[in-house]
Length: 156
Ligand SMILES: [Mg+2]
Image 1 (cartoon, protein in one colour):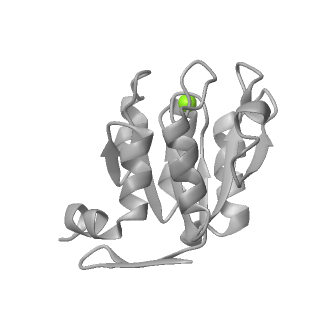
Image 2: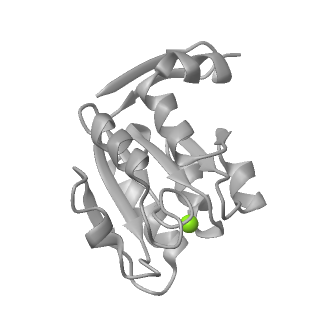
């Protein structure tokens, strides 16, 4: 569990990280080594779930050395499937990472929603549903590995 108390934002007791894959963690289906390493470091304190439409069909292979559960979505209503996935885990225990329009509802539902700008950019509607925006997956994962940074940004 990751416990982070942020004045004004409240006490977060996070057990799960739920993340989109393409555009958020991976580029063109490829997961950078640095992101893999940070995911594995974070898996010591959070259970990791990757929810994806797996556009490039590479997610399973790219995530083989990562301590996570891969959940491949069906082709329809992906936004709803992602939000439902977060709700089933218990949204108050979830930090969600995403970049696309279909990540909007899961970022909004999660206790902490982080949007990754990345090389693919991000959807503006999703940006407005997030608590925090970062420029890369590694920056986003670093915030969770160094919660003091997160506190500094979110305190009120
Ligand atoms: Mg995406």
